[in-house]
Every structure is written in structure tokens, then in C-alpha cells.
Image (tube, rainbow, N blue to C red):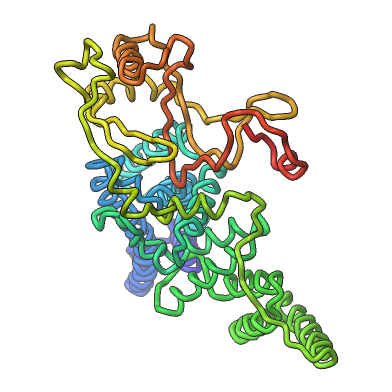
Length: 472
């Protein structure tokens, strides 16, 4: 930095003249006044640089402080909003590391922070040591806590989960960006910034998912155009991704449009200049073919192809758009108190039973497990939660799969009286013998958690499903 070298230069000049008898000449003492003035000017530049750095840290700290205070009042409710869950993964995986870099940045541009001249007082030196100790304590704490932070895989997984929810619930990027998701509380709503939208698009791009790349890069560009600022992202970078993603989807005219806009912002962009010529050539070739064949290419955008045959029904059920009963069938569904043929434990206190479906008959039992019992089951299961696995149909090896997003734990009846009581209650109410059943399974779903349609029994595996993997 120019001001820093100016300060060093002034100090060197002062040092070189230290043994001249300044006090014997008013003329030379006058020069010292201007030397000191230069030093003060340089010192002010340094102070401004430190203040700007501290202001940046203070703003970020205040933002996270307010967010953490609200989130810890209702952690499960807060993280139940997928945008909050995604931003938490991103914040801990990348933003804290960026803050660390800011804290460690020496505004003297490489000169050690503790460098002192012989004119510094002992008080200044002590203050400098105090600051260094505080910085060291923060960095040490951050290093220790980072062992428990999410990694790149978690951030990518959360991004994919947002896009999965977007498709399943047919949400547009505007709705997702504002955080106003159906069924979400306004208290927990959080917005996606330009950087967040860009990061989502980049994750899609890395998966060659150009459909979602386009959607989120368009949203990032839209928010920039509306006046939102970003310290790390610009329109040129976004347009570069956009032009390629729409080209990959066969939309040459839009690819050309985005490329031209990019070159208006940066006429020297090497890749864009090359793409411009290529897109123009390809578009001209396409139009000649259309004219010769007397047809026009229709550009359509569709999500990536999905071979899962049950996908449509599965997503309709998630949206509450499943098969509807006729009023006549619905009138035959009842609620009742149930004692399982006068079971001794339920003659006096029968349980609540509700018909959910007629063919096949599906019933729901209400208030079977108390709040205290549920809390105990959570306490027992939480330390054991591990990523849920599936059995590979070829090798039989248990492994994780992208279509099962959750963690699970297994609790044996012998491990705690509460588990034994719940198992016994299930047996008494349903009449099923739990002695041959699996241990009690506790599943915990994260952001965009799911288990795609599957069979819990073996079946013949198609060649396509073998490529997909397990089907149990």
C-alpha cells in the first residue's frame, strides 16, 4: 500500500538524520514539522484501513449474533426451514473460514503487525500484545470448533436438497429465494442472497444439471439487476455460466443473448468472444436446416430425465395431491375407542383409533407414546444416529445412497424400560408378536430428507435398476 511505504520512508528519513543537531537550527526543525505531518497522514490511512477491517468483522458478527439468538430459541423449527439449513451448512463450511482470513489480514500489506520503532511507548507495546493474544485465542477456538463443522459434501448435499424440494413441490426460484415456502412460519423465514443463488447454480453445474444451473443463475442475475450487491460475485461470471447452461439445453438464441450481454460488460472476455462466433455459426446452421425442412425448433426446458416409474405419484403425494376418496367412501371412515377385543390393559383405558383408508384398511392410533417417552427415545437415539444405508443387491454390502437421505439408530428392548414399554404397547394394540421384530428404529431426516419409493422385499432387478444400485 502506498501509504504504508510512505510511512516507512518517513521513518527511514527521520532515522538517517537522527544525529544531526536539529535543536541548533530553526530551519531544520521546520522540516521536522512537515515530516511529522506526513507521518500523521500515513497513520490516518493505516487507521482507516484497520477501521474498515473491523467494521467488516463487526457487521458479519452482528448478523450471525442476531441469527443465532433467534435460531437457538427454536432450533428444530428454525432448521425445519430448508433455506436456513442450507445457509447454516454454507456459513460453517465456508463463511467462517473467510472471516478467519479477514481477521488474520495484516492491513500493512505483509509487514508484521507487531513491528515497532524505538519511539513506541511501553503502553502501546502492551496494547499490541493484548490484541495479538485476543486474535490468537479466537483463532485457537475456531480451529478446535472446526473439527465439528460440516464439510463440502454437507454443503453440496444441502444445495441438492433445496433443488429436490423445488422440483417436488413445484416451487419457483423467487419463492425459494424469499424463503416464503408453503407451510413455513414467517418467524423462521430467511432469504437467499445473490451469492447463495450462485452457489446453488454452481452445484447444479458441477453435476451437469444445466436445467437447475439456468434457474438459479437467472435468479442470481435478477437479484443483481434489482440492486442487490455482492462482494464476491458479478454479472459477468453469472452470465458466463448462464450462456453455457442454456446452450447445453439446446437454446442457441438465448445462449447468444446472454453472451452478447456479457461482452457489453467485458468486451475482452476471451471465452465469451469465442463462444459468440461459435453460437452465431451454430444458430445460422440451425436456421438453414429448419428452412430446408420447413419446420421450426421448439425450445423447451424440462428437469433432468428420471427413470423412477413411481416418481410422479410419489411427488403428488408429497404435495397432498394423492388419490381422493369419493364422499361415499369417506363417509365410511370412522374414529373409535379401541381395546383390541377387551385386552386387559385397554378395557378401562382404550386407545384412539382412526380409519385412514378403506382398501386396503389403514388405521392410525393416536396418543400411543407420551411426550416424556418420545424425549427419552430421542436422547437414547441421538448419539447413535448414523447415515441410513441400503443393501446392495449385487454385493449385499450396506452402503449409502443418494435416494435415502436420513440418519437412523436402532434401540433394543433390553436397553431401557421405555423401549420395552413401547414395544409391549405395540404388541398389545396390534396383536402382532414383536419378539421376532427388528429393534425399534429411530429415523431422523435432515434438509430435503427422503427415502424414494422402494420395496421392503426382494424382487427381480431390471438392468436399469442395476445401474441405479440397491432396490431393497
